[in-house]
Amino acid sequence: SKEKTPFITFVLGGPGSGKGTQCIKIVETFGFTHLSAGDLLRREIASNSADGAMILNTIKEGKIVPSEVTVKLIQKEMESNDNHKFLIDGFPRSEENRIAFERIIGAEPNIVLFFDCPEEEMVKRVLNRNQGRVDDNIDTVRKRLKVFEALNLPVINYYSQRGKLYTINAVGTVNEIFEQVLPVFTASEL
Ligand code: UP5
Ligand code: MG
Image (cartoon, rainbow, N blue to C red):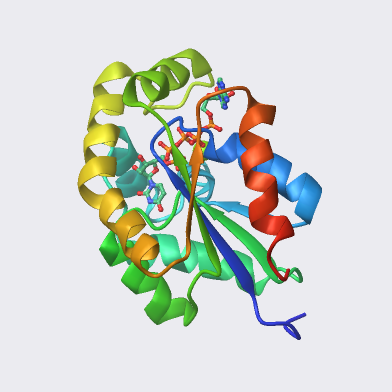
């Protein structure tokens, strides 16, 4: 499997900015493997694993699960997958997350996408989603937005300074937004 060095894309943006929706389209077009950190954590909750209760409480509070836990889940998925192209969705959410990934995985992203969306639009989308997520209520959404601003924006600034950041205007139809995403990948050596 691991003949090629991994091509890693981090997909960042606030709650409801459309990360997951755009990842589905990127996978269809460019053949990435989609690893949603949030989905991996929700799977741990559903499987009643040792960390499940802690993860559930953290997500209900809109806080960030300890880096070690999330990075181990991502690592397991990367190591068991034959693909070398990974879309890592909703991670890293803090500088601590970012540093833990670099230390444990020993790699940096090739590309970082940032879906830039106004808060009121993000709130509207999350509250309209209706998929039974424990964090899709107004109280938790407010907390998620605060955590995003305080802890995730520094990560976004870090990658901007390193010339790896591609900021996408996340307002518009799904297809209009994907039109901005396409050239990011067609221009890179996958
Ligand atoms: N929608 C999408 N695009 C649209 C468009 N252009 N116009 C109108 N509507 C649009 O989209 C959200 C909703 O909007 C959907 O109903 C969609 O149809 C619609 P989606 O694509 O799901 O947005 P996304 O950015 O993926 O939103 P999500 O809620 O998943 O983002 P979060 O970052 O909040 O959630 P995540 O699952 O990544 O994390 C959840 C929690 O897990 C975190 O708060 C945290 O507690 C924990 N977590 C960690 O601790 N560590 C991690 O590394 C990751 C997560
Ligand atoms: Mg998502």
